[in-house]
Amino acid sequence: MKNKLIADAGSTKVEWALLKADGEVATSFVSDGLNVLLAHPDVVKKTFLEVSHRLPKDVKVEEVHYYGAGCATDEICSKTKEAIAEIWSDADISVASDLLGAARSLFGKRKGIACILGTGSNSCLYDGSVIVSQIPSLGYVLGDEGSGAALGKRLVSDTFKNQLPESIREKFLETYGLTLPSILDNIYRNPSPNKFLASLVPFLHDNLWNPYIYSLVLKELTKFVARNVAMYPGAHTLDLSFTGAIAFHFAKILREAAESLGYRVTSIAETPMEGLLEFHRH
Image 1: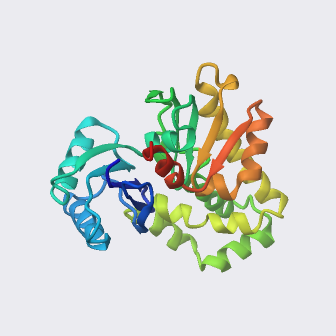
Image 2 (image 1 turned 90 degrees about the vertical axis):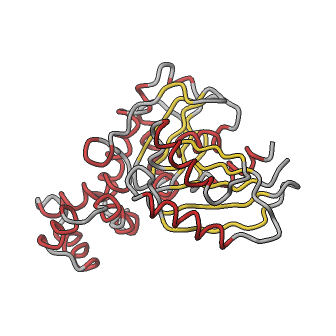
C-alpha cells in the first residue's frame, strides 16, 4: 500500500488524513470548507498549498483521494485534479464527489442507499463500487430537504410569520441578536446564505423539548426520506445509512422519520472519514 492523502471536502469544512503505507494515520486535521464548483480557482490552489505545509515532511504523498462538494461533472473533477497536481505532482490523483465518498465510507463494497445530511443534503443508490442512481439534491433553493440550510430556513420563516410559540420566538431572536433587516441581509446579500441558515440549527437542537420545535425537525427529516430515499427502486429492501452533522445530532428523530415511512436506518456516522480510511486500507 502507498501513502495516501484523503480529503472529505464539504462547504463548511474539509477533513484531511494522511494514511501511511502501514495503515497508520500519520496526521489528520480540518481546514476551511471548500466547494470547488463555487470557489475561485486561486482559492482552490491556495487551500491545497496550505494543506501541504501542514503535512509531515518525512511522509511522501504517493496517492491523493479527494472527495469534494461541487465535484459534480467530469470538467470540474478534471480542473480540481489539475490544481492538486500542481502541489503533489508525483502522486496518483483521484477526484470524486463527496457523495461517492459518503457511499464508500458507509458501505465499503456493499450495496445500499447512502445519504448526506449536513449543511446541504444528498443521496444515492450505490452498488458497492459506483453510484448507479441519484435523486438530484437541487441545492438549498429548490431542494436540500432535511439539511441544515433547510432546517434553518424553516426556523427563520416560522419565526417571522408568527408560527412559533411566542416564548420560543423571543428566545430565538434574543439568542442570535436577529432582526428582520439583519436576516434579510444575511440571506440575500451574503455569499453563503446556506451556511448562515445552517448556523442557526443548534437552536433547534437545544430546544427539542418544545413540541413545536420537535415537530418542525421531524417534518423536515420526513420530507427528506419521502422525496429522496423513497424514489429509489426497491428502497424498502435496501440498507439505508447516513453521514453528516445533521444526521448525527438528530439521529433519534431521523430514525423516527424513516420508520414512519417504513424504512430502517442501518447506520449513522458524524463524518465519512473513519469509513474512508477503512476503505482505502484495502
